[in-house]
Image 1: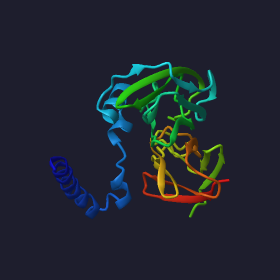
Image 2: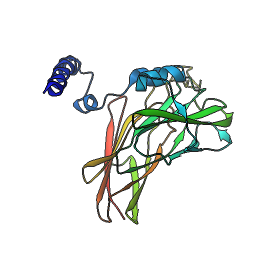
Image 3: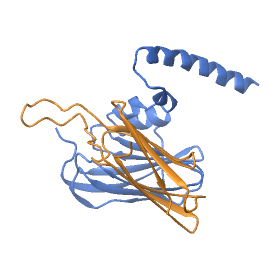
Image 4: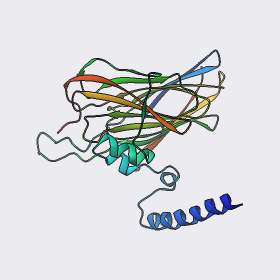
Length: 156
Length: 104
């Protein structure tokens, strides 16, 4: 009972804020459903990004997370990255480039039937660690791998 | 609709591999136009959702540091050949696109 009431209260509070944003033409209805975490993506440090994304920047290093990325990336604008883990109960996988101006690159939500393996291509401004943060069973785990970047790929 | 997205989905042994390519500039907002010296405003995909028969199998939020013309690949179980897979994206200028493909 109580839980439902909480959810209802939250819903109405969020609803009124959304109504304001909608009338201001800021948001489309779809955007409201899955809010893009601005603060996490605008954070200038790995710690701030993690705090904004997960409310916590403490991660346990885990050797069950594998980061497949080149040792040397000639072109920082296109660095292929695969994050893979043998962990069970994975809820999300996030990719971070430690030395980028805004380190958080992407965060993938992994439903139960989806394998905890993600491949994509990222931009890296300079040589630094690629950090994978895996949330599993409510806890954060991380792994890192250094990628040497010959030509930075973030412009500026 | 769907012009910006290429999806390939193939099923083998109960596991479906999805590979997608999206055509998008993914401007970081940090680059300068070489001729005018003006900063090129950020324009990038913020949300990607992939559905199988209407059920979400992957959702993601992206920042500016996903490469131009993003590539994405992942696997999920519980699909069979002929099922429909749908991928949609939305960017920071509220542009969006989606595409559907049959699992092969």
